[in-house]
Length: 242
Image (cartoon, rainbow, N blue to C red; front, side):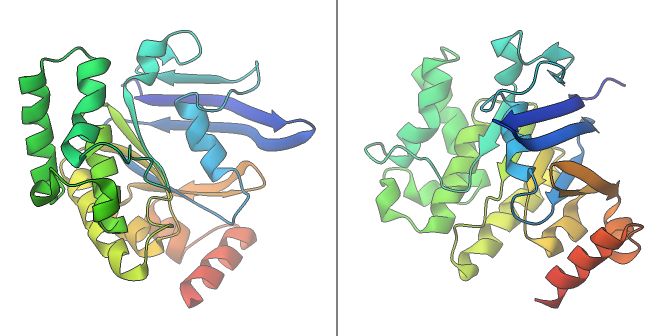
């Protein structure tokens, strides 16, 4: 089986600083992979390289559905991205934010794009907010709009870059619930997260990163309950005490 995402020797430098040091990772269809680790460990850089928001070193290779992301923009179109900050267009309604890319990029008829938007707004629980503007919504609602907007392009894989880190604590759960529903419906997901409970409950695989490298990878049970590396044990003990 060809992985949806295949990463070989992913190396990324910012000047002399090595942000990623030879990362190898395969993600198969329907898998949920959570990336955890301390701040500055390269998690967000990894996820931004996958859809080429960040360039990466020449000796590295990232393929989406078997296609090199550097060689073909179409490969990047198969990836949906949800950021820490919601990045919604403030002058557009929620519906307009969701239909913009399908109409402009995929050339979908407006009626078809609106039907997709209606279905997705219902899926993430914001159908009542369709004609409001982002500033009229809570942070949790805005992030659910961002998820719907990414899904509107019909991506084969969804990337989440710490999607709850900018939210007030009481809004975190509503976004995680949407992500759990996506996982249960078979959406392929790569999630950079500080939410260890979510990673334990939802992930098929958990990756622990530090200093731009994968220190350890395994099932949630392996990483959280039986980590092999001392550094993983220290990290897990520290975060689970909070």
